[in-house]
Image (cartoon, rainbow, N blue to C red; front, side, top):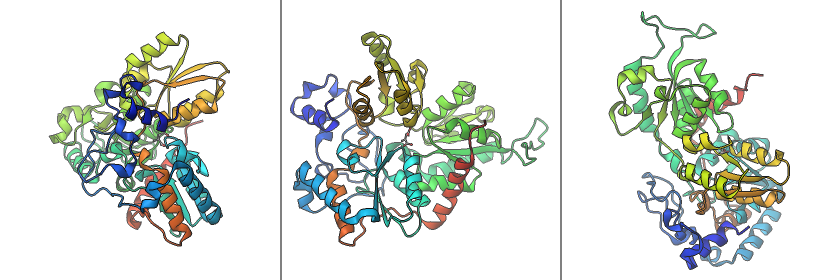
Length: 441
Ligand code: CIZ
């Protein structure tokens, strides 16, 4: 299996090396992250998210010392190992499933955002948690770890374009507009307030935010009777919300919201899309009143690349293959797949299969390649033939990891992600609700 880095380099030297490469995944991702500027308001840089705009005020990474930029992959590997040896249990390195292999090789724990945040909480003795993921993940780790621990993001420009599609101001505006149209509580046709199983007034709308959102939005949910979900517990969380309210406002990922609610039997007509640039999100008061799930107009640039045509091609070329899609993929793709679920679901589906199976997987390429390497008993490939890593995750280059670790050895904490205390308090209310929302037996 050719590594993602090698394939990107091939793209640069021979643009014809990957069929369809010009479709939208730019070969410029093969450049080092410090080789292309990331000025505010420009796109996230070459790659899957190249058309998404970086919000003004997003953190940027100043230049790191030249020696890290000049070092060979082998030298960086040796620097990271040496620094980790010196730091011992003082540091824990987290690697997300979508992270590049050269970085994941140094992770003490590999997992999804939630598993890694739990690991952060499980290691209160570590002075520093170096989070090789993206910004919202580091924020969640900071909320769940102790005040004495420093959570470090090796490159603060490693954001998430989907998370940035719902900013706090736009969600507050949406919330105020919904309150004007729908009122604070669910009522019957006579205007009497409806109550839930516990006799509490049923809310008109319950906010649910995907883990892929800023701490500010998790806090918004905490103070407005809402909750956080991940892709592995979205159905349980929606059940929790429907027990407390008439409707759900789901942000930022429309696809996870739609796929989950549809599987629970919510009709598509009762899932209007909220466009934050239009009055009432582009909806009529009547359609909002009839809604069960109001979906924010957000998406993941990597997962929305997957198509039904790719599934048809995989089935034609590999008869009998099993197609597994992540629920951030568009609904048509999830409907056409054999199964759908979070990164954890995908891993478990592959691990549980009888040897000799073929899997076409609709999720980020680093994870698919790693699964293929870990499971030589199966044939595993990515549904999308054009290589497209999560371009923001890809900004965690080993050079940055070496730099933050060597700074720690020198007694300096750089790139600390620190969530405001009040925001963290409110966000943890929504996170704790998620933890308590266990599926019914
Ligand atoms: O929560 C995560 O880490 C993401 C981004 C997806 C997943 O399915 O685990």
